[in-house]
Length: 148
Image (spheres, rainbow, N blue to C red):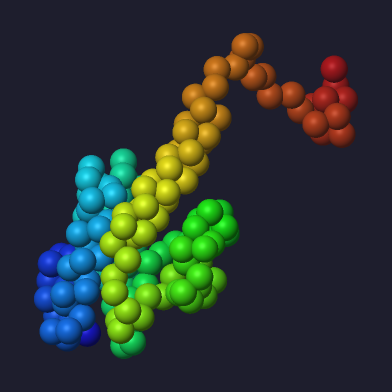
């Protein structure tokens, strides 16, 4: 496939039957993540919140995929995802089945929460104030420590 520069272009270069399906997938993700930035990463459609990738989708020969689908997501949506294939952290949705727009919307929201929790945890750790300044001490076996 030729190098594309936007999600609209990515969808437009797909076979005609696939384009309509990908438009539905795109619409469902946008509905679930209305504030997300839409772009390309790894030459596939990507949706980011605050600069962090939340969800990707891609077209393949017989199915389209959503990424990432980790263990928490798979467990939370186990019954709804039962008709679909999960390979590692990728969900495969066959083209010959109706697009589960509501499910995709919910998966996108779930992924946003996952990314948000990780972002929050990272921010909390990195902004924690120390109560006293750190002063480097030489290792006890270092020559500078013996001279004291």
